[in-house]
Length: 82
Image (cartoon, rainbow, N blue to C red):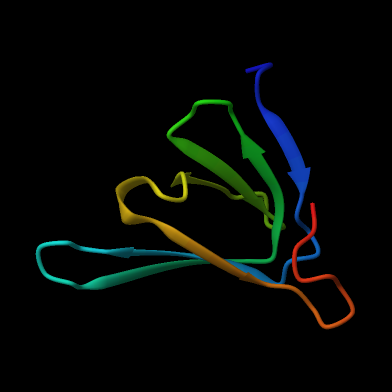
């Protein structure tokens, strides 16, 4: 997969994804503690996040399937950083 780009996100304390079921309005939150690396593929419908335990998480891209994302950086770090 040479078309994957990777980004260091180890400064994030956690990263969350949220989906709202359009039929029931139920909210599903998926949290990744201590994310390490973000992997993106141009035009892909998913992206991957590797955490510090070596677990890879495959997530629908933000905006797809109603997905929104949020994260928390420590106070000494800029709020948005790659």
